[in-house]
Every structure is written in C-alpha cells, then in structure tokens.
Image 1: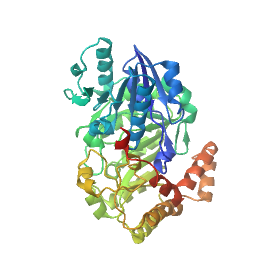
Image 2: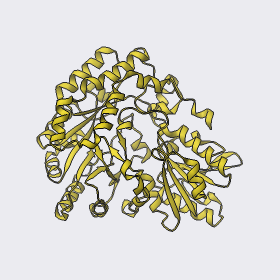
Image 3: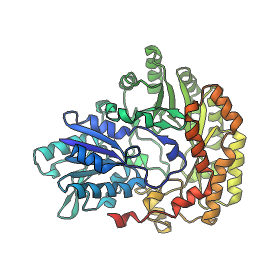
Length: 465
C-alpha cells in the first residue's frame, strides 16, 4: 500500500517557542517504520506546502495526519483536500488532540481517528484494509460508518517501548537542511520514554499516556544514538531524569561508546536539586541545555498548577546547572488575569536570575483535560489555532492590546543583548549561521502587533469540518 504521512504546516503565523523550533516529525518517522513492507512517504508541509503535487506524484491509498490542538483546522482542511482529489483515499488522523477529543474530527472527510499510540494501530489498520476486513476488528480507532463515528475496542498502551521501531529518518533526509532547534542547526530528536508521573493540571501529557510512565532500555537508546550523524541531539521526553538509575546507565553506555553529541533535555527542578551528580555526569558527556518548567516565580502559582515543586527548588536547580556549564531554558506561565505589576515582577525576576533563554506561555486550557472542562464557559474563542500558548483564549484583565504589548515586553526586556550574543558566538555556543533566524524570531516576539495579527485572524474550526 502507498501511504502518505503528513506533518501539517504552521497555519497562521507563529510566535515564541513554536517559531524557534522546527524539528523532524519524529512521531511520523516512528509510525512509518512500523510498516516497512509498504511504500511510505512523509510530507512535511512546514517546508513543502504543496499537497496537490504530492497527491498527484505519489497517488497514495492512505493519508495519515498528526498534530496538536492548533493544527486541528489545518488537519481537517488537509483531509478535505485529499477527499477532493480522490474519494477512495483513506484519511486517518491521530495525535494528542485527536485522541483526547475525537469528536472534533467528526467530519465526512475523516475516515478513521487513531486513538492513542499509533505504531501498532496503523499496521493493523493497513492489514485490515488490504484484506478488506471489517475495521471494527482493529483496536484503538474510531471509524466513520453511515455518517457516524463508531469506536472500536480501546487499545492498551505498548508495555515494552523496546518493541517500538527506530525512526525511519531516511524519509525526511531531504528536509534536513530546514530543521533547527532555536539556534542549533540540524538537530536530531530522540525519544527514550513516554509519560510523566506528575499531575500538573494544565498538562495533557499524563492524560494521553493514561497516567503511566514507560521507558526504553538504555541499550535501545544507545542503538538509536549510534545511528545519528549530527552532533545535536534533543531528547523529547517530558521528564528525562524521572528514572535516575536508567539515566546513570545510559550515561555509562554513552561514555564507554565514545559518542560525542551535544544534548538538550527537559527535566524537573526538584529532581536536579536532589541529584546534582547526574547533572555533573551528563555535562561531562555533552549536556548543554536543560528546559525546566519553572511555570511561576511565586510559590502560590506553583501550588495552583499542582506543580509539586517550589521557587527555591527552581533557583537551586539553576545554580547547579550553571556550576556545570549547562544553560537553563526557563519556561514561565503567564496568567491572562495579570496586570502590568505582575509582568513587571516577572521581568525583574528573570533578569535578576539571569536566565539565558526564557520562554513565556499563556495559561491555556488544553482540550481533553479537566482544566479545559473547568474553563469551558469562560473561553473567548473556539478557534483552535489560538490554543498555541502564545494567545489568550481566556478573558484578559488588560485590554488585548495592553496584554500583548506586555507579552512582547517580556521578551524585549529579558532576551540577552548584543554583547552577550557576541560572546556566545565567539565561544561557539551560538553558530553564526543561525543569527538571521534568531534575529527574526526576536523581532517577532518583541512586536505586539505579531500577537494581535494572529489573534484577529482565523475561523471557527468546527465550521470547517
């Protein structure tokens, strides 16, 4: 079977972290690897937006699309275009939003919604289609039958992540020059675990993974790393250090193998504080940056988010990272009910703590979470494109113009200056080749009109289905 897997384009203009990062579509590469006996192509529409050309040149029999909440309108439109090209092409959607809110894909253009992890589901779905079996025999999907969504039996999570195939990265090799991670060029992303044991109320990760945490063996991770030619590796695990013994073992294997990479991870502050030795070890084999969800700069904010950490832990973690030559990428949540004093206080805090790479996301109820249900009646829009953490979908205390002016001011006042940028270039921390892109991103995030322009555009995704 000819299978076309699609990474949607960005839709309307993006700002903030979403503009700073464009990495390989790892989920699609893993799913593609699960059906090696079939002819599979990956279309990354962030780089190659001409869907019609791909449909005509490849003539797929099945088109699969994945994405997050802001991608929903684009995913629906892709399905519509596919069906316009050929009614006989099967359309399948998957990912976080499709799994948590399949009703948003109740459309005549969507044949199947894959709920949960897709590797085994796609393989069994393709087999059923080829054998012309009833799709009701495939677990973990929602079929469209007689104009209605009909769910099959839920699929259990994969108990052994070592059985997940290595990504079919050769399918995106021609896109490689266009991938970046902030100032890093040609990064490779690696998954070593799924799920998170914590229950932050704004997060959908633990919800998607049914509250469970699973991990690949260090040996399986090493096998993946040995196939990566780039010096830049970004681990996509939401909590890379959640299993300290596994992190220790992987460190030992990497050190013994002689692999030389620069690593980026996500980790919790309290874990770093409790286990500073693991940071020291990983720094010795190439750990360069850690993204920490600081979330708030006041303990009452962390309690509200059910973060189960503290501001003092955040600050101590930053100190430990700095002592080991590791940059802190600090993420903060901005409450739509903030006034100018709260923005001022956050700016003062970030500057005082000298956080090299701060990121600011607006508190957003993610569809499918309890927080979304709690805030449903307060939502100011149903346009999913604005659920990107850089636009407020809840009422703001300030006018929208004032609110976004302060969002822009956050970046304008906390981004490192020209002197620091030059120092990082001289030290090799920032490659000259990325300067133009980084400068353009800074120009965008420090311009209030960028946020307002996006907020004023877009339509109700429900009307597009």
